[in-house]
Length: 110
Image (cartoon, rainbow, N blue to C red):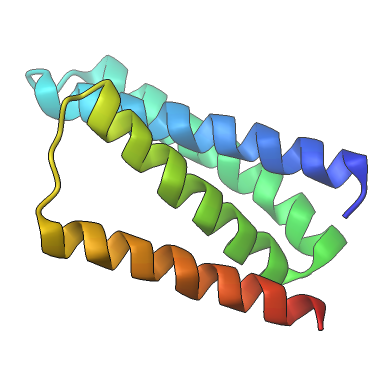
C-alpha cells in the first residue's frame, strides 16, 4: 500500500471516529439536530474516502483494514472518553473480531 493510500486510510479513520463520537454525543443529547447532521456528514465523508480506497486497493483489503482500525480505535474512545465498560464476553468477542479481521487482511495479501 502506497503512502497516499495510507493517508486515505488515516483520513477515513479520523472521519469515522469523529462520526462515532458525534453519534454518541447525539445519543446523550436531547435528540439534537446539530449532532445528527454532523454525524451524517462525517459518515458520508468517511464513506466517500473509502470509495477511493476500494478503487485503489480493492474492496476486501480496504474494508477489512478500515474495520480493524476502527474496531480498536472506537473501543479505545468508548472506554477512555465515554467511560463505557465491557463485559468479559464482549471483550472476548472484540479480541476474536480483531483476530478474524487480521486473518482476512493478511490472507488478502497472499
